[in-house]
Length: 153
Image (tube, rainbow, N blue to C red):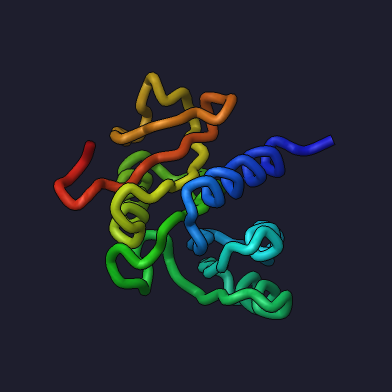
């Protein structure tokens, strides 16, 4: 039986494939389990994590990974066609959540899907997050879209 996370990952991979997206940034990539799923699906994975130990474990699995903080990612603006950040907001105060989501929007290309898990229902918009497009079968898992070249949709 698939776990909540496995089901969401499978759905996000399907979304990326349907949209012809060939790469993803994995924020808080941990030891690389999700990264391997993306690579096995033919999607290039670049992971970041604040833990050197996790990054080393992800690299040992053959993944591209580096140490970085979610609030200050070492990538150019619009560098990624998608972002997988399901663990990135866990335990952050609302003000930090907004900052991390803004940083994710910065490194994601225009209109790129950004997968996150919000602590509460999106209808309550607990973090002041705009641009929510889908709730893949639950109120907690959300795919945001980065702003287009003209700003938020």
